[in-house]
Image (cartoon, rainbow, N blue to C red; front, side, top):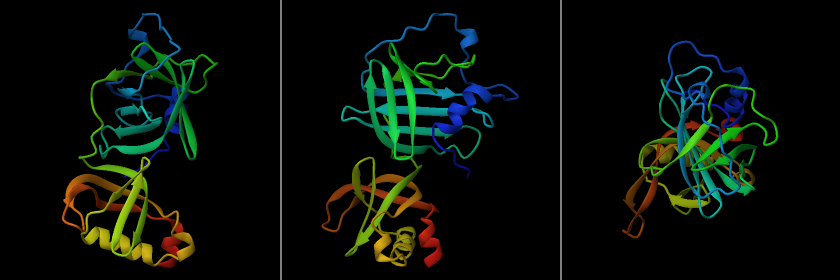
Length: 232
């Protein structure tokens, strides 16, 4: 499974995109309507299949939430086809939307019921490809498997993961036990920010008190912190 840095590869493909065969991605060449940009963007879910330099297209879902947080799901079609989830925060300045992650930013310009991904708010894009995501009534569904970089923690028989500003208990199974051992083998001083790349699925399960709650099920350990690799 190969991973891409959200926004960096996609933004670069605004200039470098070339792909043999047919793709489901949209092209501005087939749309002669004049683009109307607006200064207000409402929270919601935006979705489209965007161009990809070396795959069939990137199914992209952007959820701009009312509380200022954002989720972006990207599925590289024709490959593993399990979405990679990125969690950040968003803000808008006169229709210029910035979604910020700890290590990068993605920019969009607001249209009426749509957002267009751009590399720079003030520079016209030198591409004929369409990077516009249309507003969708679809909900972001984490009951299906997804990849994500999440913070894992274990203390006093409590296993948790944190992502998107929320904390979730983890289903107790063999994969979680493996994650626990990796965590415990890491020096105490380095456990505070134990961020790992995991394949997850959100499920209903009983907590330690017998109450049904939303849990994160670890399906696969994809990548662990480098310090943990050296201490195993």
